[in-house]
Each structure stands twice: as structure tokens, then as C-alpha cells.
Length: 316
Image (cartoon, rainbow, N blue to C red; front, side):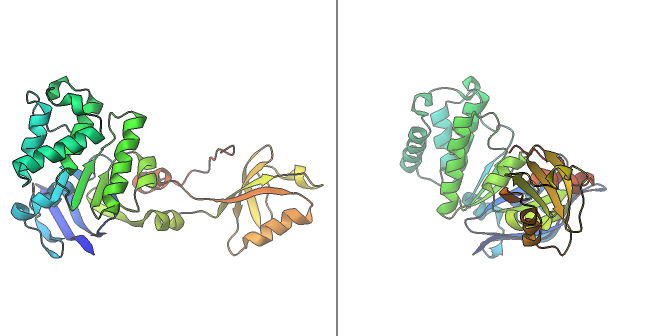
């Protein structure tokens, strides 16, 4: 089921196009990466999805109906990048208060806060004040407040900021669990390796416009360059001549370190033909793997207009 449909969304500030004709659809239970450089329009888009801003043009459907901020906001959890908590208020009291604002009864709110505090080992924090928390502790608290009312749509803006590896993994596992239970998650970050690991679908925006939309797998397939990493097991008679500038009708070598090659297979050539080339020269093949571009490479290429990098670490 499509939980969110954004159609031709536009938002202008004076003569600046903060969001310029963006459309996409999110399915229930998906983990969606919203990407873009600083100033791309991500925050403005998120604020429209949470009812903080109204679009100048376009429409938002939530669960198949026109988005109604007054009623639908109770089904959305939003964790902003900036800490939005009351510094002088006690942590337990604040979490219960914010849960009740999302529609939970008093006892239900207390019970759910206690459950999450136990899960995140925050029991001893109940009477602490927000101003006494480290950035990482505050980040864990914000995550709990964002999800404890079990929203259908969860928007996380840089959720791992300030967290150590143990707590980052804790949050990541909860993201997977929430998605498996049916929550849809919008994940906004500058950390491409996290997007690559966590998200199943991405949208990349730049200067207010959408420039890429698709599953992580399909995006990487779209931008692959027919590059393969070959591990050589033994050397044949002609093998020493295969250097970084070596070329045949089948492939060209773009990098070499010891017994490892990165080759670019020419258009129309099958991988079996390349394997046969080495076998015919009695050169054993220890490994043969396609190299797909990272999301970081794709991001830089599309945003900065630079070609994908051909510098590969062969030892990996």
C-alpha cells in the first residue's frame, strides 16, 4: 500500500525555488533515503510533509487521502536534526508529555516511555534534565520520543549524529524492526554509507529539484561502468605484460596492484570471454567480481557534474 504520494510539490521563498516540482511515492514498510547537499531543499520538503509549511503548488496524499495536518500529524513521528527538547524539563516527564500530545492517554504514555527507557537502558535518566545530557544521550531520547506513539510515517533527520557505534547499531536495529512492523521511514542524512546499508529506495534532490529516484539496487546498476576486479592466482607467459595501460579488444586495464586487476570490459563483450582470455594463457583466476559505484560516487557525480572515480582499493 502507498502510504505517501507527493505530486508536483513546489515551494517558493521570494524568487528562490526551495522545492521545485518534486514527485515520489512511498510504500508502507519501506525505508526511504532523502538525499541532497546542503541547501538542496530537503528541510523545506520535510516541513511540508509534517504540515509546518503549506506547498505553493502540488499535493500530498497520506494513506490515499489529501494530507490533513490537524488529524494526520498524530500518525507521523518527526525527529529533526536540531535538538527540539525543553532543556530545563525532566526527561521522563517530558517524554510522557510529548507522548500525550500525540494522543496517548496518561497511563499508556507512562507505560510506553518506561518500556522504551528499559530497552535503551535509560531507566536512570528519568529525573535528569535535558541540559545535563550529552549529544548522544539527547539523540537517543529524541528517537524514543519520535517513535513511542507507533507512527505510520517516521521522519529521521540525521538520527545517528553524536552516537557511538554501539548506540548507532541500537538505533539501526530499531529502524529495521519498525519497518518490519509496517512503519514507513524517511531517512535523511549526509552519510552515504548509512543510506547504502539501511535504505531500500532513495530520492536525490539538488537545487530544489529531483535528479534521481529509484531503489538502491537499480540506481547502482544504472550508473555501473562495466568494471570488474580480478584476482590472479598464477602467472602465465603473457601475464607480466598486463599493466595499468594494457588493452585488448575485450577489455582495458585501468588499475593494477600485484596480482589484482581492475578492468573495464568493452561494450558487447561477455564476461565469459574475458575469463577465457586468461584461461587460454594459463593464468588462474582466484576471484572475479563486478565493481558497482557507491552511492557517494553517484552523489558527487550528479551534484558536482564530475565523472565517477576510477581509483579503486584493490586490497578490499
